[in-house]
Image: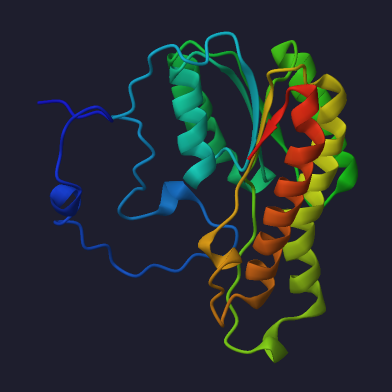
Amino acid sequence: MSRDQYTFTNPVELYAGIQPQKQHMREPGLDADLTPKADLGEESYRGTGRLTGRKALITGGDSGIGAATAIAFAREGADVAISYLPEEEEDASRIAGILREAGATVATIPGDLRDPEYCRTLVAEAVAALGGLDILVNNGGKQVFQESLTDVTDEQFDDTFKTNVYAMFWITKAALPHLPAGSTIINTTSIQAYSPSDILVDYASTKSTINAFTKGLAQQLAPKGIRVN
């Protein structure tokens, strides 16, 4: 029996037999090198046309939450542009292939979210490739744990905030002139915003910032018919 998101299953038992071994990869890491592979919905997600005609930009769309979102969006009928680091090309190419198999127009736009010029160019290239933009998913992020705050370098703190917060600001600001009423902005936050781990002080701080940014922007854009959450 094939399984999809509509199949009734016991979630407690669904992955009970999986016991992944610990694995360490040099940052940023590749899904292609993971054992076992992450389940991104490649085999299980079935769309029903809920996003037909929509045009989405997803940062960090080569792996993890971003890739799963891209697959779901494409199978729901959306055209998709994904952003990712150049060294993640192998993962991005695989995801782009899955999106194209779903019938989506796909744009792959590599670059570094810490670079404000790339973030602005990213939006322009996505709009040109897709013929517009009405969904923005700010998902790309950086997380590196440190046992002590004294081990968090100025560079790590700066990189984490630029990737998680500044990029969200740069990209959203560049996207706003292109977003018609009915558009959606989705920002990826975390339980770390509410219950921060002692080893993720810098990362958790960015997630709290994302929450505040999202709530404030939602109030600003709601009268224009743009949903932010």
